[in-house]
Length: 172
Image 1: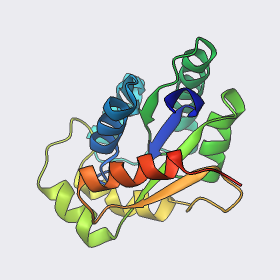
Image 2: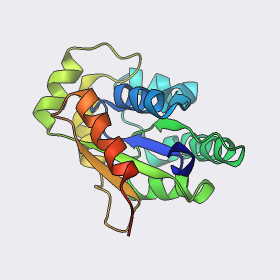
Image 3: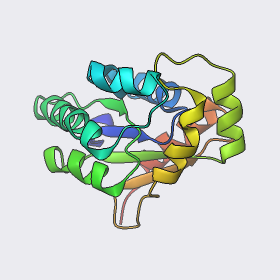
Image 4: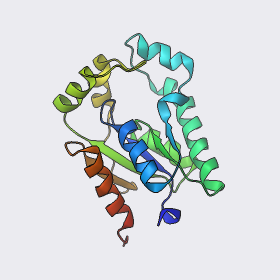
C-alpha cells in the first residue's frame, strides 16, 4: 500500500500536532519524517523567536526548500512525510509546483485546545503568542485540493489510524 501513497505534508497551525502526527504516520508507513521547522533559514527562526510573525517573503525560500525536498525524495522512490504549517493556499500551491502529487493532511482544531497545548510546551522559536496570527493566516483547504482533514480532539494513535484507513480507501 505505501508505494502507492504520495509524499505527505502534515499541515496546520503551530500546536496542532504536526510533528507528533507526522512522525507517527511516517513510522507506520515506514517512511522518513522531516519536521519542516528544521528547514527554516536562521533569519526566520530569529524573527519568530522574537515574537514576530513571518510574512510571505520570509516563507517563500522555506517553501521552496520543502517543495524541492518532497520532489527529490519522491523521484528516488522514497516519498517522505513532512510537517509544515502550509497555512495559505498559495503556500500549498508553491509546494505542489515542485511535487504535484503531494497529499496534505490538515490537522484541524479549535483555538482553545491548541492554545492549551501550546502553553504546556516549549518550542525553540514559536511562542504561543503567535497562535492568533497563525489562525488569522490559515486558509482552510478547498475541495479541489488533495487533502485529508483530521480532528485533533482524538488521540495521536486514533488520528493516525484514521489517516491510514483514509489512505487505504479506494478513491473515485
